[in-house]
Length: 430
Image (tube, rainbow, N blue to C red; front, top):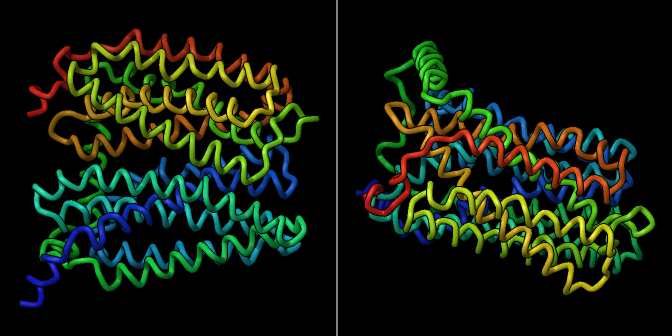
């Protein structure tokens, strides 16, 4: 009787908060850390190199994801990782004002990254166990919305709060960021307590005692073998690694460009202005572009919209060439430029995600898709490692021109794809 009551808990009580908790540490590791380190005085070379390595947990996530079920339930992993993420936020907050702030904050960002990647695995699996098929379909848009809201809250609201605290505490940058991270620590402790209480306990969510680590490892090796035996494997992997090459270069440097001082060639935005431009307007543009991309591909199929999406993910990058030359300080103009670029990226990214699904089709589609997402993370990690060094070597203006030249690579790898004309259409999916 008790189990039935737990299983029937209203999904509205836990699905939105679960995916908010999934999105917040990711945006903290990937974006908030950039603004923090820039304000603390690191160079662009150091910032992009250090923070790009934080993609690694998502790159190697498929290596340990099969073993999670062996130890505990997915519910246990969710609440435990949320507690660990909260502790990592607290660790970052504690380390910022110290003399060894760089080593200390990077350590806790690493802890946060691994805990967040593990939380992703458990949460996505738990979503399918905790809901019936009808509710899984119904709440797929809700989970995506609250993940985006976490992004807006992280890149937008939290960065704005850090900026406002700097005004209140007379430009005490380290103290202001420390207070902000302590606040997020409190949020995550609240999420941990909430999910400890409200998450259902599905009967299917049990540790897998019927298999051992050796069996899972053999299955994983077989998955790798079948993945690399697929048709067009070389073209597929090159597409996964290079389709987003311009964005891999641009993603971190564009954020640093927006907040860098004007005498360094940047736009000189305050944290509050950055939170509005990139963290709010930009994320809204990204979301709207993704929604439109899904609608178009669902109606006419991926093949018909592939090249418009390629143009959308590459050509709008030229707005940064304009901004770097014009250095237009009008906030409305900056917002429009960032919105255009992010809208185009959201629309064009649809083609990338659909291709990952297309490539993963077959007997091992879940495992193969996990490997595709590893290549997806790697496609952002590798360009990011040297993006800052390249920018400092040539300056923002020439860097953004190089990004536009790299768009040729996106067009090139896409030209070799072979995609069924019906893939993605509503009739095909049904």
